[in-house]
Image (cartoon, rainbow, N blue to C red; front, side, top):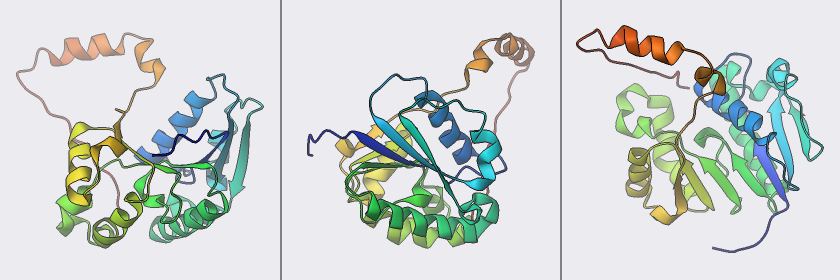
Length: 214
């Protein structure tokens, strides 16, 4: 892998919509943390117009630039939004091929930019294809092509890292494990303590999470 030094980072955060979602929250959280870091690297962020109320709440340093994209690439438009966002991401990645290009989810992966960094949150459609018929073809045949050209793959769990390496034949050295964090405000009150006290009285409990597909 080249040790080339990049002075500019492009972040494709067009998956932040009007409504909160797991991937959108992830992208928004990354932006909020990056503005706290004092660096000379120029960061250009692409977002769609449906999330303007959320972006307007963030104070950006001088080394940041916000680029507004049509609202129709928003996840609020479901399948057509996902498709347009994928197309837009690939067009943008060709134009910005000399810069580090960060896609914050697998749904916007670039097939052409070898300087791409992409976050793969999970590969659930491959594990349960009967429940993800619309996404199965993309995950099975298209995503793997892009990942082989990717500079770095980020994933939040060791299990997903193992699956990416196995299912797509990707060297583990290209996959960085970075677990998802939680907002600071969860650590600034007694909510964690009260939850522990409440649920420690119960013999057992379970948690469940789900995401809406295409």
